[in-house]
Image (cartoon, rainbow, N blue to C red; front, side, top):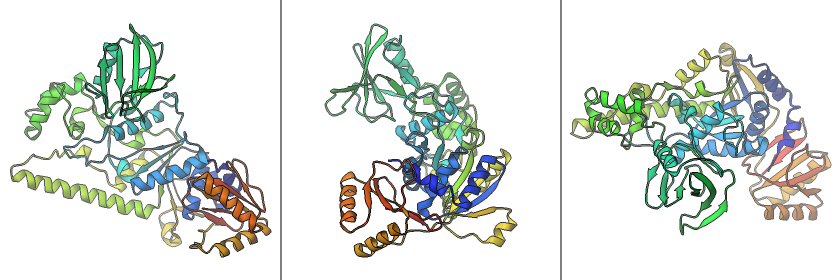
Length: 471
């Protein structure tokens, strides 16, 4: 549900207004915005109205939570999550196909906005620091998805070859993401980013109809007028150039000779992505793909720095352990430096060379003298965390009654529609003015509690603005 109305009120805060102005100008290289946890999503949403953002979190779970909350302020299509691999760069294990497809979808939307008919341009990319530290194969954003729409003149054999080229696996019956099957004039394919597999019916060389179907009983479900938009399942595809490089490297990399031989023959193998630095056309960084004017914003920078340090150290430890294991006669690790995690300092240096601003949003009070030495501007949003009532209903009702009497703007969120209705009944029965609102798209009214459904974990209280978000 939308909470955009809160942005209208929060923009009146002097510190947030200054941050928004700095984002619009685009000439502030370093800026720290101090704000409570509940105010972080609206602060980022206000900045995103001026500039595209890459928001870096410490963990994947924080990425999911923050992206969910940001969608309440910006809309579901303007926020994208860029996940990290589940594997280390040197491991002989491949990331999951759905993870790869989600990453490729984000990259393609960044470089080719509007390419996917179901989405639009991205305003905020939220990524865990693990995804930001890892280099990317150059040109991932330009990998073409397989498109099959009703009325397209595409032969069934051509469609099958295109899916094989996009690293899909041909099977007798589709059950998992990244698989496809051909039966008569029907093509079944399970795109990694789709909730259900898709059945494409051909009439000669023309796509006649596209439907989703259930994996359990293989029965067709709803018609998909937009057709199939199937992204590749791997970040390293076995093109002719890649196969030639693999054949030429067999003698140079004896520890990976078996893997390279299979790749040269066009056989995809587990962990082939670890060879990307020597097989692909080059490596690049996520910052190289971002639109011009993008600002990098670290969410809780101290946690991000600690996590980045741990990731680099862990990667080095696992690599040393793999070499020790190889001395005992097991597989030799693929130690290719271009694929290793960057340090956070290297990423920031790369951002500086590209003139990408490096900002942060933190709940910690900054050391003014230290930050002055670092030439970092600090802005403090006039808001605080909500005091926890820990089940003390009477105290909560008394506070709400006092705030509404004083003319405050109050938004109260809950996860479900039923609990929201019960909250309105409870508040009204205790002489607290309350209204059930489908959303808060406009500035909330004063002296009234607006009860709505939204996926928000933390609230805030802005005393100067006389506005509060409670969860």
